[in-house]
Amino acid sequence: MKRSKEKSSPTFPSNPYSVARWSGATGSETEEETQIRLQTMQDAINVSRGIDMMLQESKRDMDRRKKGVKILLLGQSESGKSSVLKTFAPKHFESERPIWKIVIQLNIIGSIKTILEALKEEYEPDDLSSTPVDISPNSPLKTLRRMRLGLSPLFFIESNLLKILSPECSDSRDMTVQAGNGWKMLLKTKRNPFLSGNNSSVRRRSQAVLGQENDPSSVLVGQRDDIISLWQNSETQEILNRRRPLFRDQPGFFMDDIARIITPDYVPSDHDIIRARLRTTGIEEYRFVVENTSGLNADFYITDVGGSRSQRASWAPFFDDVQAILFLAPLAFNQMLDEDRRVNRLEDSLNLWKDICGNRLLRNANLILFFNKRDVLAATLAAGFQVRKFVPTYGDLPNDVPHATKYFKEKFRVYHKKYSSDSRPFICHETSAIDIKAMSVLLTGVREAILRQHLRDGDML
Ligand SMILES: Nc1nc2c(ncn2[C@@H]2O[C@H](COP(=O)(O)OP(=O)(O)OP(=O)(O)O)[C@@H](O)[C@H]2O)c(=O)[nH]1
Ligand SMILES: [Mg+2]
Image 1: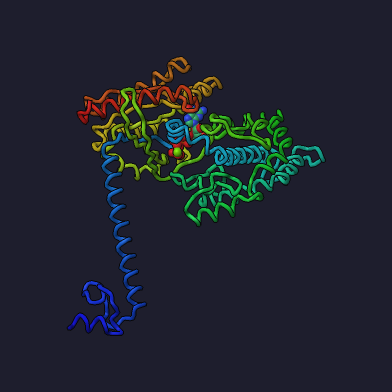
Image 2: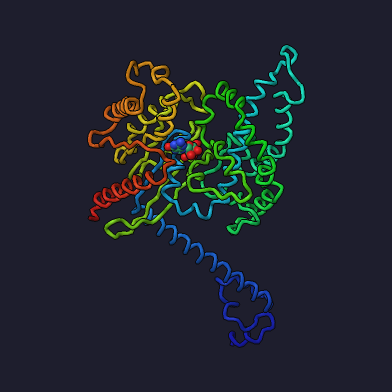
């Protein structure tokens, strides 16, 4: 019989698959080849099941996302979007303190560079031959040169860190990171207990970069006294006031805190972390689950974007199913955009607001406007900056916070009325994103209101 013949054949061992056409058997394989073939088939089945599971999981994720509340943070660069996000998800702070410490140290290195540049302009102008220069041992020029030499290891470390963290930039003041957690993996050190990434190349790079030699802490601590006396020097202050009048208002300004920060055991506080400056590029969506006051769990998806002009084209794909936009508009009437020094920040914010109000993809989304950096506005006015110098139409209105805020609010309201659909209310809040407590209260209220509306719209209440 055929069966028994096959059974007894030396080249066709007793194997139910060996005769089945679909099995891939060649008819002349050895026992070993059969085993390999079966194993290969099993591997393929496993891969296929894995893909099935992933597809199911991704469908579940998509269904879940569909039902969730989607919030988009929009606004120009430096408006405070990532800061608001930090307050939305504060639990990250605890595990991320060592990472933010390095960002804060890089912010300080950037500030030191700004100070040294201003002093160089003062004491070491390009054309030294035409300027009488005092180079006696205690002259400011000698001190400046000594200082620069002493701090040079810091700039070396800065450049090494940037190569990894922000390869496009050579200066920590322009440091930009890709949205998401990838950059945080790069800043986890061997000594850092949170190093647990699966991405081996990231892990290798992070171990390579954050050895002792690339940690700014020891150089900063070693130069602590010099840095403090440089900052506290009255001549430095006078030169900065004259040559860099907006220095103190720059994001990531920690110079008033250096005595506290430049210590061997420094651990950033929540307030330090919220004040750290790191530019975002790209888009990142975060999911978190919230139990609302009615005891229902809801998925929130909050998307942070890069706000500089070159980044804005990538926002649109996130517009079609979003429930709410939190639009951040700092009332920076005296500042220009970094990416185009001819454009006033406030004017840019207004134009962006106009585009968002009139965008048809967003016609069903709630718009919530945050006039952010209220504290900066107060400090700017207190420093004597006159609104009417930058905004001639401001006229003779009093140069104070309530009048300035009311005036600019009206401008945003007019655009809202003109470009938004009739049914959309004008909702705005004056905020200071670095005031974590006040911001958390406000964001909880905003979140609840968005959720209630979302449930109403979905007929779930
Ligand atoms: N003083 C003050 N600083 C703020 C406020 N909001 C944000 N900042 C600071 O401004 C800087 C920029 O804030 P981010 O949240 O990074 O700005 P962003 O909108 O995410 O900017 P991009 O990522 O470039 O689009 C950070 O250093 C913040 O700490 C505020 O209300 N007051
Ligand atoms: Mg950001």
